[in-house]
Image 1 (cartoon, rainbow, N blue to C red):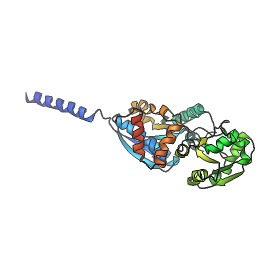
Image 2 (image 1 turned 90 degrees about the horizontal axis):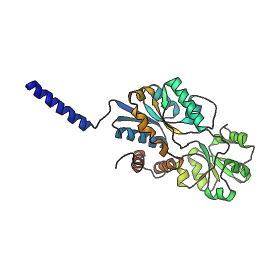
Image 3 (image 1 turned 90 degrees about the vertical axis):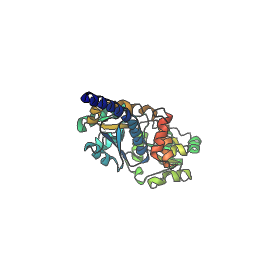
Image 4 (image 1 turned 30 degrees about the vertical axis):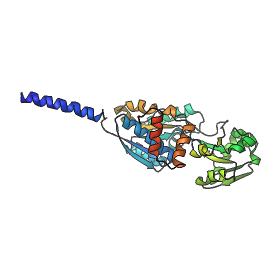
Length: 297
């Protein structure tokens, strides 16, 4: 009788434990991020979604750039982090530039699997590629919608950007190679953090930008369409160790549901909430996930 009573008690305790644990997953998922605003926000989104699904998550954010993040995931110090398809193509795999989004994704999907046993989940439609952003009044004055339009009016326009942009193959020389030779009224080289200040204060007409910069939304700038496909795509996606995905395949569905919601306009707005309004990335990420119905209040 005592043995039966003990087994009954253990059974009840087991049920209570499972109920209290809420179906918690075994093991810990370690999520990394690079050291800039967009990475913090997206890394928090991944973490919050997985925590909501019952995973224990450890955050290792603010990794200093792509080489450090890549070393961390290939050495299993982290299990996943947000990466950009263009970065994977050019920086890690060192493959030729390609402006076709699907082709770039398939290249990194195959290359990372073969070389590192890492898997790319679904990429978001957002594209944090290098871009050219004009003040709206300038765009309207000169009819600027595309980079071709800028080239046609180049001798009347001042471009502001980092010092190396007028020498790099993915800078002014590359634009001239793809779009035809042109001469700007002036190129104003400045430190990266001063590009938008100079633009909005009227020192320049167009700035070298990245497609999801928060300042684009904050200052109502016009991003010129790369109509001849000069810049490679930089779509963001979860990059995950295959061993982790094999152990917890549900992670794929949990994180893939987020991808379609992450557009250029959305990420510009969210980035500005952090970089412009000085809010915490975790608060911005959670608010977005609640608004989109992924999390409860």
